[in-house]
Amino acid sequence: MASAKYTAESITVLEGLDPVRKRPGMYIGGVGSAGLHHLVWEIVDNAVDEAMNGHATEIAVTLHKDGQSITVSDDGRGIPIDIHPKHKKSALEIVYTTLHAGGKFGDDNYKTAGGLHGVGASVVNALSSEVTVTVKRDGAAWSMEFHGGAVKSKLKKLGAARGSGTTVHFRPDPTIFPRTDFNPDTIRERLEIVSYLHRGVTVRFNDETHGQKYEYSHAEGLVEYLRRIVTEAGARAVHEAPFTLARDEETRLEVAFLWTEATEEKIRSYVNGIPTGSGGTHENGLRSGLVKAVRNYIDTHGLTPRGVTISAEDIREGLTGVVSLFLKEPQFQGQTKDRLNNPEIQSLVDGWVRPALEQWLNQTRTVAEQIVARIILSARAREASRAASAQVTRRSATNGRLTLPGKLSDCLSNARESTELFIVEGDSAGGSAKQGRDRNFQAILPLRGKVLNTEGLATGKVLENKELADLVTALGCGLGTGFDLARLRYQRIVLLADADSDGHHITTLLLTFLYRHLPELIKGGRVFIAMPPLYRIDIGQATYWAADDPDRDRILKEHVKGNAKPEITRFKGLGEMMPKVLWETTLSPKTRRLLRVGIADALETDRVVGELMGKDPSARFRFIMDRADEASDLDV
Ligand code: TSJ
Image (cartoon, rainbow, N blue to C red; front, side, top):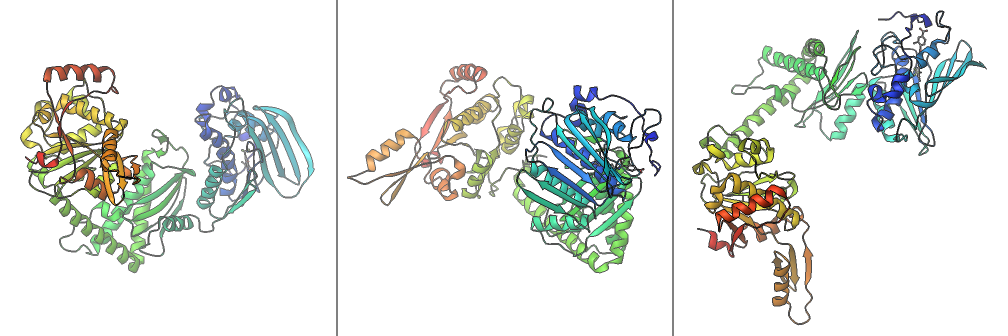
């Protein structure tokens, strides 16, 4: 740690600010909205540091009326303004005009004892068209102005002043940022989190763009945050007082968690005040330490009921918590850089959490009993649902080691005879179909997004596509050289898409796939196209469904008598159809119409498919379809 005494001498001068203006992305991640707001976090973090070191209690942020400039102030000691003996400059000037070691996201040299944030004041300065710093200390106020990273007016004494503190006003440079409007909500949310992560600090936000003021202060810090998360989730806590842990060492850790009756685990984690949405080694260390502590508690007290095995997932079910970690050199990973990657942190956190939690469990036995009862309940529920799902996937057992795709809603029937797989486009249509079907013999597989055009693709490439791989797994009959018709898990494969051009396109892509990679299914007459209605026509008391425009016209001609007024409703998609209506019009073998897909002239079809799908996937092409007018015809 740096010495408590700070003088201008302890600052190492390294580089000018040109590199920052040349490649801003290197320092703030980019010049988009996130980069713009990064400037605010950099300045606020400096004030937070002063508060963390016990020298400030209030931080105030103002977003000015134009929405493009910000003032941040604290009531700390004030940035030192004494003159550096070698550089003949004030500490303040050096802080603002020199890029410190480390480059990316700040440096180490200007760090106060325990200060862990990027000290990006110079980066903010380089990327701002104006910065004014005002410092109050030793009975006087001082100010200095900068422009694009350079000094605009030297440090000058404003006069006598009481108290102490630092105030920074800055305006991001519009020649660097394409858009310079700050988002008040983004700032407000971040400041609120700051107030939870640093208990006892009062954070104010004055949003002049909306004329609104906020004040956040949480004496209980993370515990208050946790309480809010639990309330917002609408979950019931299993016990009242959360487990808390605070270690204030070179790496600072604060943890608060409790168990709720919810089934998910919810952990929010922060590193140096930055949310780590993708977790990382700190979260993993918490999980492993926690699971070990609970397991050890259960084992030493012999609390596992006979016939029950408790897994780590059971222990973590309903766990809701907040982790805040401050460390010197965080390494972030992942696409959005929101996962902590420092390997040493996992065992550190594990080693802190485990004994503390064990001790807590042993000291608060009534709470521990409630938690353990909840965990045993999870274990029992998991075992019961595993038994139930084994029942449902019974057919997969006969098909070797395949696991059915999670999004498949299989049918209950054990027999393959008269079972049907409906391939449905989209989750919402899938949901209606799932509710509307007869689950005894109808299975639903929703596909997401566009189906891959498989024309000209090898088997291996096809299986790289998740949607098609899921379909192949659900069918059970394999693909290419591994194809085995005897293992097909359903009697009929039914393509169910919206009755519009998008729907036709998806059907075409699926047919291309089936024709090229599973031609036996088509040749064997196992593939069908469902005919969902496009229109609902109410004439008096009677209701009719029309598959397309000619169908609609025919119905109108046939059934509109005298001056009866027909009411015509056009369906936008399967998803908005009531499940019951979907059943009556499209799914029920008694009332639906299916088209059986066949191949009239294999050679000719081959040529047409190759031509159309190879070049233009959206080209309309037609398989030769046997119109099967009534479902009864199909029930072979
Ligand atoms: F860096 C900055 F300009 F971005 C900034 C710094 C912005 C804001 C809003 C506040 C601060 C800041 C810095 N607040 N308080 C301090 N404290 C010091 O710089 C300081 C004061 C005294 C001593 C000492 O050893 O006497 C040491 C330091 C680092």
